[in-house]
Image 1: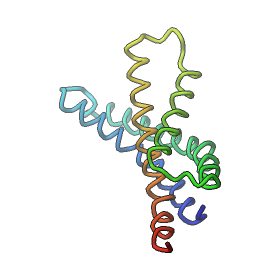
Image 2 (image 1 turned 45 degrees about the vertical axis):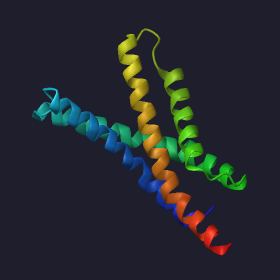
Image 3 (image 1 turned 90 degrees about the horizontal axis):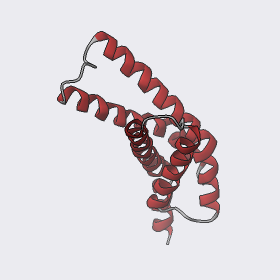
Length: 140
């Protein structure tokens, strides 16, 4: 585990969750939604700040310790990082989602958390593990 690349990944990867927010905003504009107004812009800013803050909490509390364990076990596959990230996000949404939430809203929340977790996990792997893998392969 390279401390410099892990720190860089922990600081940068949560911002990749904004890609999902941008995608949701673009979809809303294309379908004729009303988020292009000033009120809609406020909602998007607050939603984005919440997404990035939640991503930071997940990366610091779950991602970095799991990265440490995976490095000790020498498991550095990108699909494993993405799978574990999605599993952690799904466990979170399962335990925190209210049971009386409508099914369609619950399903869209699950999809958003799953896609966001996959994107953030992949970017974390890309920044923390991939440069280290290149150095290992060149040393062989």
